[in-house]
Amino acid sequence: MTGTPPQHAASADSVGIVVPRKFAIEQPLLLDCGRTLPRHELMVETYGELNAARSNAVLICHALSGDHHAAGYHSDSDRKPGWWDSAIGPGKPIDTRRFHVVCLNNLGGCRGSTGPATLDPATGIPYGPDFPIITVRDWVRSQALLADRLGIARWAAVIGGSLGGMQVMQWAIDLPQRIGHALIIAAAPKISAQNIAFNEIARQAIMSDPEFHDGRYYAHGVVPSHGLKLARMLGHITYLSDEAMRARFGRVLRDGDGQFNYNYDVEFEVESYLRHQGQSFVDRFDANTYLLMTKALDYFDPAREYGDDLAAAFRGATARFLVASFEADWRFSPARSREIVKALVAAGREVTYAQIDSDLGHDDFLMPLPEYHRVLRNYLSRVADEVGT
Image (tube, rainbow, N blue to C red):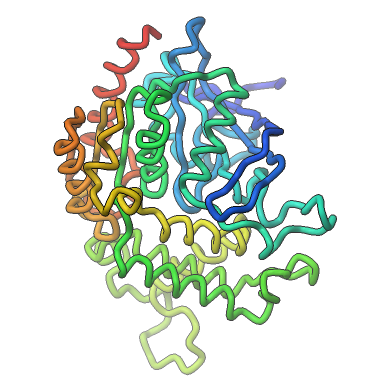
């Protein structure tokens, strides 16, 4: 890079310009659905240095619409940093001066990892709807293969919010020897029937789009943009609290005098906001991936194999836990986080719980709330002292 450094690259608490790397995982991966991927690729970003003992690595697990780009910028011209830049960087709660941070685009994603838009080696055309159904446990298996490739035998911590928090739980249950601390944020031990219903409406919006073509829209050179836009608009409503929407938008008219609108054009600010969010999502996300991710969310239920006893599922875990919830989050409410805490206590696991005052809603887990960041910083500072960064 030449010339005057951009403001973001020069910032003392930014990881600056980052370059993603694609890793080929050559080992076959047996999936819960019974199919095997002979190989797959994962797009990865890392921040901070791995210490000599290889003991300071932290894995960040992304949520439904996330990806590998968690912090920093890809170029001088980037307007926005990675999706969790507020928490990752020098001096931030996930301190890259002390930790080697790894974030990947999960298997089935659409940001460089093997997924529905990837060419199927057996046919030479994109997998599309033929890509196998993926579960949270499949993601953990894939992430473990990546850790092997990176030479990381044990994570100092695995951290995730929402669907990312579910991956953290699966790590602690399935591979207890490979995780020191589990940070579960704004998550649930399984999603409610109401949440499954929201996901189903979103899927139906996508699949009923005339441009969906049974998931083979790549061959037609089109995108089911209308359905994907509606799916994102619905999802976004569930991520915000009623209070947050009222405070931000109220019933403010975007323009006009409030007369009857027979064309159903945008009149209220909230309508404009949702349409913008929907369109921007269409520009960066794949519809088949959205279907896969919502199904992984629906299927997650680690207690099922233990007679619906979540405490029994956690009994073999050896990690120490931080569970955090947000007051205004109605989609994954604090009551659901307390279910996790109660199960961990019943299993005899060491757990710290924090309920954060908030007003935005589910998306609060992405926000730089002072109380929230103080909890993360204090907990992870102890983890860093423990592993000798």
